[in-house]
Image 1 (tube, one colour):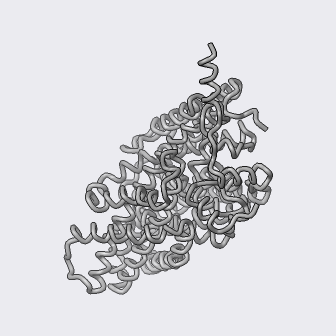
Image 2 (cartoon, one colour):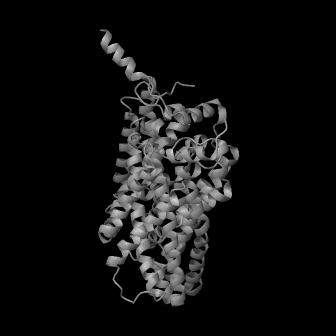
Image 3 (tube, chains in turn red, green):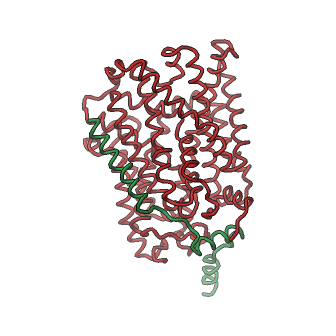
Length: 468
Length: 61
């Protein structure tokens, strides 16, 4: 079958499966795109969180370890279906959640991406204001109350224009902004080389008395961070032709930059009590460094927001009511909530974002456990690609009324396990948490419940488990 | 008795897919789908996802 360029664009925008001949992204292009997606200012906040509990070396080790563990979970969960059939993360959940039940992971994806993007777009606007002041375009002390909403609107318009080209727009932005990863590493070099003795001696402000608890929390924060890449990963790796092409780009491009850039926040909060380099680079290197840092922060936020909005818009196409809507409409639907948050409630959202994000993070570990158990154990790597798009009862993935109760029960069990081990809002934990983390048992319990209840579903002849 | 049966049959009939999607699914079913993880992929995943994290955790402690 010959599929021309317009056809590829249609498939890209409709969340239809891509054929191997259309999946032309090699390892280098994928690495570039994934790295740009992952490298944003959330890295500073992640580093700051770890630096609250651990010293520099311990924080660096545990965060890096946790990030790689979480990335493996995400890759094993969403990766196989996405790379085999060229589909996005949400479409890959239909064999587990059902032909209607996939709205549960789709809702998680939408809330998560909108939340992240709102944070980043506000960050973008704030850093752009600071950059304008540093460059002398605005007077010091200029109020951001009006400028932040205006810049948010401007950024949304630019992203909308770039993404009208589909994934090509994401790749284009990635090519331009990849350099900011190296700027981040340069900032890390600056603080490490200028303040090494202080950095090594610095003690975390909120460290718990229990050393193992702090250590495990460093790992847990790393796992949680890369688990939140689940919504993004499918839209990117579906552009690559096979599994081998995606593994190293995911591990080195999407995962590694996160702990590396988080070290900036980790070092900053330990030595200078601030994770934002645009604040401490002025102290370390003067106003020129501050301008470079602000330029970096602005560019990083912009790149990640673009990729996130693209992934979210592709995910919306799975909703039946939106299947016949234009790509422009989907983009508008995705950008509008982000723009509204950035324009109307930027400060309130900043204040409450930690709680919001903690609750979202609880769901992705069980989701990964469910997908891994389904694909590798229950289905033994067999999927029915037609069933992913078939509507109506009696279809392989329609289960009961389009919902798979096994997946819903497993998701609930996984979330409950997480909360019992570690309350994501208060950070109160059980005695088991320091030995187990919270994400890994949550994923394992969800996988176990899904396996047991999925076996019953299979015996009932539902779910397409008996199809060749 | 006939009416519920007919209703049931109608409900189970798969809906028609857009021609472009139909062509894509046919191509994938004919063997054009990609592959997931081969042996080399698993080696990298075990190295980066299990061995490296364990080593870092032990070194950092």
